[in-house]
Length: 271
Image (cartoon, rainbow, N blue to C red; front, top):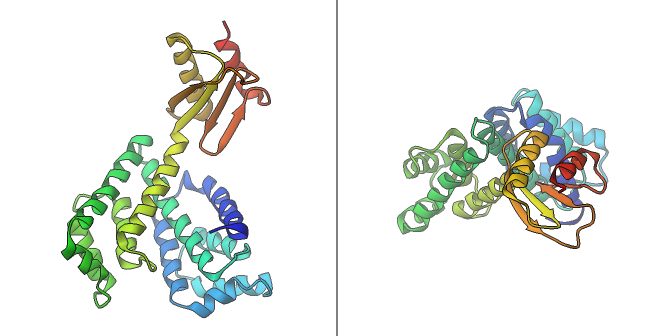
């Protein structure tokens, strides 16, 4: 996905983020359900991504498709996607899949463990990839065009019997609706989304000189308080850095030369 579609997806993810703190797995389930409806009708996909079609017309069409079938929250997410611009009809479905998976992953993240929960989710998804990848029989079973999605979902549960609710949802989606991919390839995409989510728990810190253990501890405590979670520090020495300290957490870059909220941390690190 590139160009205008990439920008639309980025905007959709930014809009989704505030909703994730309180979202339940039902949001992800509803978004995957909408994806199923969308994928079953090529004409509908083209109509919803037609740049010459009026926005109000597309919104009415989308509402008719999902009214009474999903939650109001899921409907709002979908309508925001439909209002955006897409380079191709396929891109709308890909974006919806990304938002659904991201919603599920955020549920795992919020289940008390934060980064640890994401690590556990990643391992469960990797387990599915490894087991299926080592068995030709399983690969044939999941690739069988005659087998129903339900049958494949039951088989997937046997492959990873102790999977969490989020892992089970993502794996079921991958085997029942791989959307032209091998199920393991789609699960690998979900793993990449987990890894992207984990970046929110890593603080990439650039400083002009080595920090003492005491300074590192103060920096750790200050950043944890600043971001409201326990971050893992990755410290890099950059003597050319102007301002003394630069922090990157996820997609957010905070430079002490421009952001007053790092001023206190910078002061504490000064010798």
